[in-house]
Image 1 (cartoon, rainbow, N blue to C red):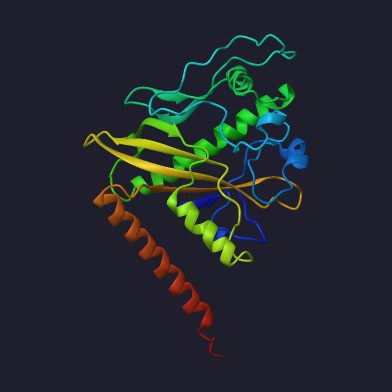
Image 2: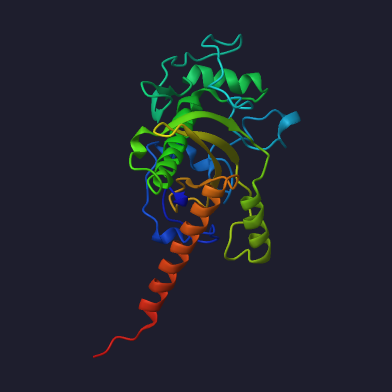
Amino acid sequence: MGQSVSSSTGGAQFPVDHASLKSASCPVDHDSLKSSSQSPAQCPVDHKALHSSSSSQAPAECPVDHSSLNQMPTLSQGRTPNQVLDLPTARTESSILRDSSTKWDYPSPQQFYNALVRKGWETPEEHIETMVEIHNFLNEQAWQEVLKWEKRVTDNPSGIQLARFKGRPGEISPKARFWLLAGWLLPSRFNTEPPFDRHDWIVRRPNTGEEVRYVIDYYSAPPEPNGSPVFSLDVRPALDSFASVKERIAFATEEAWAEFRENRSTEIPKRD
């Protein structure tokens, strides 16, 4: 909770000891992505191939426009004028509740492609379906982290709903800035690259009607030896209410105490 990773990594680290976290494998066959996953901290998709020369310096981000706090934007399912390949138009249902009876749907590969084209990015059509799978996988992992937080404060986290969300690429959160400073001071221990994306999710607790804002920073970690990309998600309630501040402090205290006890147990010599 806080930061989770898809698999363990070596080298520069994020603030959390990833070796102690349970790995979660990505469902995507990354063999085709090895050529685009060799830099230690970047979006899992090779955006150098996606951006036009005029926009190559733009921050990596989700291509779907989540710029307003509302529902998933309406995206066309039609082919673009210069499109060569036929892309699937079926949308995948997420595990994320939208209300008491429906769940959010992810964009189809065709919608995802149209969003990339609309932003002016040069897009390899043959990689779109893989990109969509990565996009969906990361958001499913983020939701599981939200549920872990919610289990601390509610008896029925399975009923928690994602009321709305907002993408904020290029807006670095205060916590991300802190860890960037730590990486600048101690580059051998902490990551030195910013998140490749940020989302703010508004979560509704149906039992009380309360809404809580979560901040999600999406990182790329150093790849596995075989080239498979590794992701790190930093998910936490925003510090905009007393209850969220209290919960963040409580979790940080528990985490520090657990680490202290673990270190103590390894330092105590065993008696023969």
